[in-house]
Length: 151
Image (cartoon, rainbow, N blue to C red; front, side, top):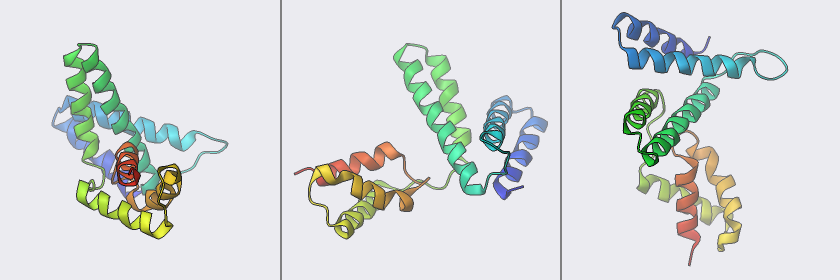
């Protein structure tokens, strides 16, 4: 079993003993999502730490989007619950890049790819994605690439 998955299980046990309902429910949901990912496909397999991080990132993004939708619908209690769950999930993700760090990585990728036009954005995204994986949301990355490429 991977280190991250072991940590999630240990933290779930700790949350259950502390009667922390939010953390318990969130970690159970996350471990279920990891297990579902492990058994999906043609054969069952164990996820690596990187794959578990992708699942955590995906679940955090779901919570962020759900909170926005609930907020837009005037359901503030549900929106706050989604934000609280996202806060629990973010603890397991790598530290996010600052705007300056992200801009610097994108500038380097643009220079390396020799891109000058906005329609070549895909080349920059392809070059920068591996270096920012898990440390910046895809929307944030694409917005910054678009901003730097626009005249």
